[in-house]
Amino acid sequence: GLGLFVRAKVSSGVPNGVQLFFETINRLMRDQIENAIGVKVAPFLVPLSITLFILILACNWLSVLPMNFGENGSDVLPPPTADVNLVYALALLLFVWRYVVGARRHHGLGKHLIHVAKGHYKYLAPLWILEEFTNLLSLPLRLFGNIFAGGIMIAVLGLLPAYLLWLPNAAWKLFDLGIGLIQAFIFVLLTIVYFSDAMEIREDEH
Image 1 (spheres, rainbow, N blue to C red):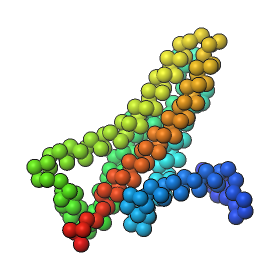
Image 2 (image 1 turned 120 degrees about the horizontal axis):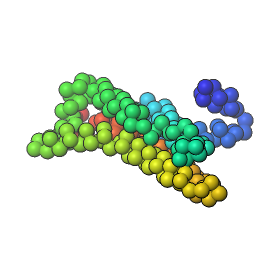
Image 3 (image 1 turned 60 degrees about the vertical axis):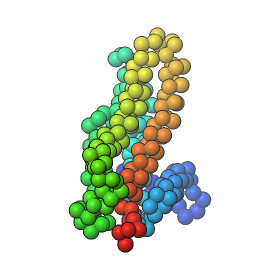
């Protein structure tokens, strides 16, 4: 639905706001990927990054919808990224995808693991394994923690009397927009970094 909406707004003349928004995101993601590994090396990262950014941003920005004042100021439609089921499923998908593209880049999973291990001293192998799992845990936790904390803050503000609630609630929801934007960008940026590490070709491998 979103794709059809954007396609309907795209024109060959003067670009409108929607087109400028998506062109800005496209340019931003391309620049990040080019600096990390190169668009030609990982062309799939461009649509992946844009899709991730739009998905996470839309989920995060659901927090600005009106609250249900009858239930202590909780959100009528809580942000999906405030649920660990979504963020961990997303991180697990990216974790597996990262190893798949790494294995294709180095012509086999075994060669990919050797490639990764060469970047570490042998006696640090346990720490490397631990790092792989901490990356899997920290990437979604960072997103979940920030968005979930925003929901808790909304619930706390909901305890205020109705005649006082509107001002801090409006201010916090505006703040939530900025937090949601930053967290979506950080998630995508770290995803690009993780994929670039997996697909890097070192000089000693030529």
